[in-house]
Length: 266
Image (cartoon, helix red, strand yellow):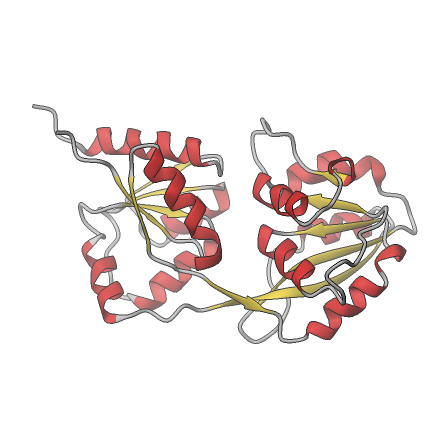
């Protein structure tokens, strides 16, 4: 019997389950090693205020599915109406989170499902014609462990250059995970001929480096869901990193190909 390709899903606990289930359904042996931790924002009052002034914004941009979930969880009332404001997202997961939260599909703007990449640049190509001088846009994002806004500012810069007024609010906090001794040992063992690492966030790679600062990753294989994440993994010393769209089917196909590449021919 041919062994199933092994993969470690490194997403935060809130996001990992559907990936593990989906990858296992496609014939992989997917397990969870969280390299990210997510929690609610420290200043929930700022999110409440954003909800109360929602009608003043032409659009709200959510940087991730967690931004959507925590923003709606912090609504002043469970039945707070969304209204006519447009909702912008960069990926299918965030779009699905908006639909689950009750936002009408016709109000959501996102890169096409077959877009080469799902990121701020791809979103800007879709929404740029909407943006007019004087428009107000809210960006809902995460905060770092110290509570400061975290993430890229590329889209905010583009919006401001187009004459829009941009406000930002942190709906959740990105935290450093606490690694157990068992997890550290398993991660070190996987630096050789072990599972393929699935990286969905550059920050996760930094957390792994901090947990195992002396580890050699030159024999490790990884799949990254964005070129920037792949670059971070290569900078950290990963021997081989494949770039793939952030869908379960695409990731599964890539990992199976890597497994065939690594399996000796007889």
